[in-house]
Length: 253
Image (cartoon, rainbow, N blue to C red; front, side, top):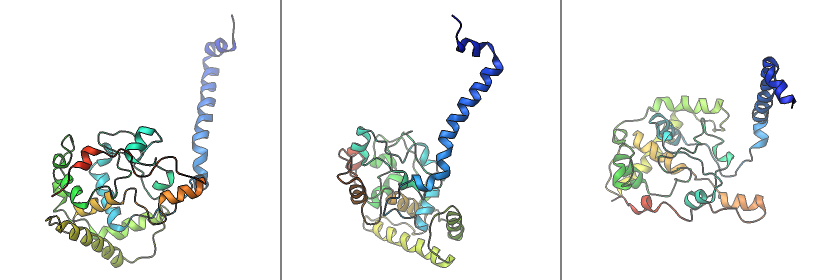
């Protein structure tokens, strides 16, 4: 029986035109919303830009390829929210350039990593991953301990983020460097309580600052915001119901 579909198949040029029309429609459906991104992403109160030190740590994280094994996106699936906490919202990554979403997880998702473990845990994990997570196949990053981050590059990094729309307040180069060193000194001082000595301007301290920021927000808390906007309780708890027991059981000395 002759059908319009067979007619399409017998005329290559018409079939090609049909394919282009269908692909164009699909492309427009995906691309058009990007022109209205400001109105489609609902802001979450409490999400703030990275501090200069956290921004440096994020770039170390990307440079070392940590994103290859660790995603930062909790998908709206029950097993994921029970392990990692509330599913990720687009607004949480509004200041990420580039964002770290994905589903490739050789290691656990880190979207809610901030505050889950002390600074000493992260230090020991970076120095010797298997001392904290026995089944980990992550390589050690001990070289970050003695490698200082480039303080002179900090103002340029902040300037680039401003150009991308991140609302950093007006800061001169000196204040940017001082903010990074002050936060680094606070982390280094906290590590001393666990008998760990590290320079406050090291890339190790910077990446710890970044990891401790993930999933952490200024007041009001995300739970309060979601409850307020939804008119009731949140779909899933922000805090995991079944946290990663294997990683949480190991405690740094």
